[in-house]
Length: 479
Image 1: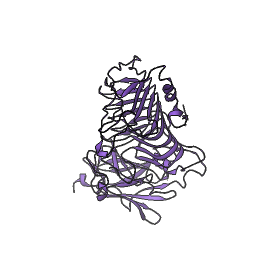
Image 2: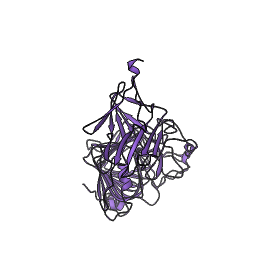
Image 3: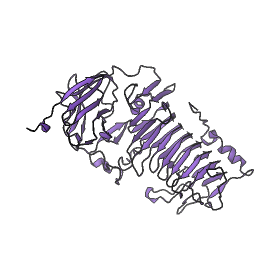
Image 4: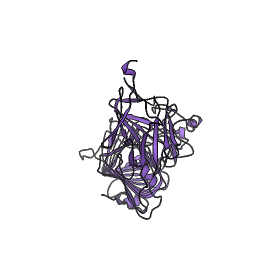
């Protein structure tokens, strides 16, 4: 037998780091290390190779409880991740239910997901959420072919020679209100979703989730929680990302959209601060969906595709940056924007304000069209959704600077039939990036320029967040 075909596996533990050596694959670094104790149950398993690995199309990853060898979780690589693996297909709502795909329950909602994601030389394995619990030892079996190496082989682990680790004896103590998320396992949780699942639904006091600097690749879904503060350790260094969109996770007519990286549903009195959210797929690919009351975004960076930031309820956005691929803000709610920058390759917003509430109010903001032909907001005819447009759409600009916006500024506004007399596309003192007044002589005829002293009462109202947000006066925790 040729020597190159002989596989020799040696497991060694050096300074807490397990390396699996075989003569073809070289060293494989495991996280958590083989034999490790005090592991968080929400851990993602990582294998780092000397060269970039690839993902197989067959084989299983099985996890057993060592106490009784009961199978607690399994990932079958022969099952496709989604009806549109790369998010470039077109799938009708509910059609995906006819076929079996990789499914994970996240925050109580089903999502399609990637069981393994490869970044550079590291394969990250995503077990199903909440399958591991505290105080148990787990054995991981990885069948041959699950992970492949160019010019080498990785034969995985067997039940007789498994990857083994033990979870912490218990979670955060009762009554604790501040927890830490750290991808390296040094916090109370490894994942943001793990911390959100732990957080009480309606606590009397604020619950704080601090995210240690690092990269977190996960879909996050939070529903029916309140008095929650989720914040990065130091602004700009914490990044949350995932490849997701409406083709990878098609809409479900019986529930909320599933195409975002980070979603809030039915939440209240919540603030997120000082981290970045990235959606890596094209199309309808929200980075953030907010559905709730009294939600604050402070010092956030939101980067997505179409509808990068979708809003329902009452929201206050402060000192943040939003980037998207057209209709960058899809707005159903009342949102007060201050000192925030939005960059869009198409229309900045598609504002769908229902009757009886305020819409999007921008004060001292920056609205940038990246290709030089963007509009501030549009109301296109939308027969696909059976809508009679949005006759009470409201978007107000006060002391806001713009660039790359067409001379018409707004539109298209379409019907038929459509009465636009109640639409409020209003501006006051719109400037260019250098602070010089914009020429508004060619603005779309449904829009309006506010002027003093005639419109003094409107300007007083729109400069006051509480008047826009139904009496709520938002106060950021770390201004």
